Image (cartoon, rainbow, N blue to C red; front, side, top):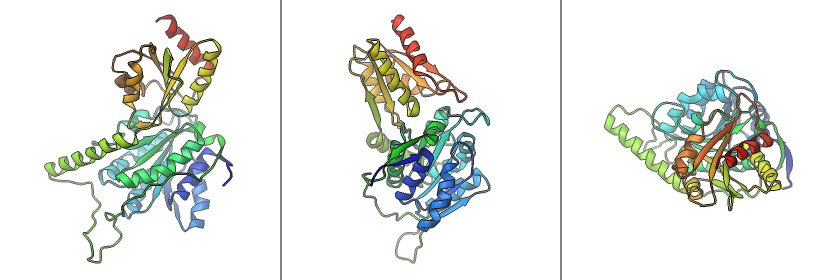
Length: 354
């Protein structure tokens, strides 16, 4: 299949359909509206179901129902909309149900603005809702990577019975890039014997639930899902280390901000400066080991975390570096996008102080 030029939001929606998603429940909010718009047109053509719910709260609970019946289901929203879904997301994680959730981040807090941001990092990686749980959170930096991770995300969600989030932003949702949908490796997955698809006396009854009145029973359940999270950390952590060998300063960035850093690396090379990039592809589980490994290299003198926020991922970077080297921060927020020239200026300030 030849590559086709697609807007990021539409490519994500098409990837979900090709991955077997047949149910989408959502509510409009900028800058992700092309996802439900695309799903509304495409799903009826593949015997799927699109419903624009009356609210984000309704949408995520519809996702709960479809996932409980074993269907491949997706929802999408942007920052304040994801906030409204948090109670339902916690229920879904507690009930061990697979689904894919797309968040095209916009500036906040509150209603904020409609421009791209990365200020939902804490919300996505540290829980967001109540209780002890995690989502698997992918942060694609290109439209093609978003396509690939959406497709794989459905498999990962099914394999571990856990929701997967695609953490994008207004840029990756609105930009157009050539993409292809072939060649995505699919996993062999077990039958969904837990799904509520009918009993007829031939198998154990399936009960979908996240309520445990007995505290010991609830604790055992939480221990069980945290054992699952350890397996996810072991098997699914993804990271790109770019131009790090010989680098004196390593920049940590994810998503579309990491693309800007690759331009910074080009500008720095023209000035005889060697800069590296560590790009977490999974922001949960976070690639702490990669950061610790590079922090213990003699040629690495400092780290700089660059985010479209006031500094959220920097906490995980510091945990990974573990005090071996200094960690600095540069960020823009409110929908402002950092420029390569401004980032390089920050790097030069760090180098002058070494």
